[in-house]
Image (cartoon, rainbow, N blue to C red):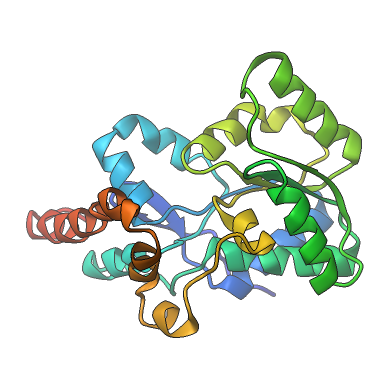
Length: 252
């Protein structure tokens, strides 16, 4: 029997599940087999800081059934606050684990997000890497998120028979879209908000080398490759030092 993975750990107001990558994947696999619906969000420290700066985002980010720490900054903050997490669980890696069991269990998958053509390229590459992967549909993220255009996207997902839906629109847009529309897709058992994962699967964006990931410097590698991200990256030290002040002020 799996350990209880549903205990939440509060990191600056965002509640994370204390799970490993393997535990998260197993939970989702069991949920599909047992007919439970899961909504998976993957906040990193940038997203937590965004919630701190704009508290209206807390109900959105905390509306998932499974929240994993997609960033070493969140793991460090949890440790600072005396409520350590088991470790970072990268959303792009969880996505691959989900695709692997989808292939084994013949669970239909739909890929939504990215620029036009990215989801299709990702699907082609993934089919070449994972035997018998049942991707039943793809769509880009460039559509109106309300009205008839949104209705058409949802109709296509429902018509595909997908039970696992990758939603890669970027945070917090993907989280808002999932919350607003998940009840309209009753066959989908797992909704995954996975940011730029389709770009990684498609090969249009490369992950950091293993050494950078191991040292918790994936963010630095991205900054070296994309200096224009410097504004966004300034959220990381703000979050880290802010967490120390939060701790010193006696808050948990």
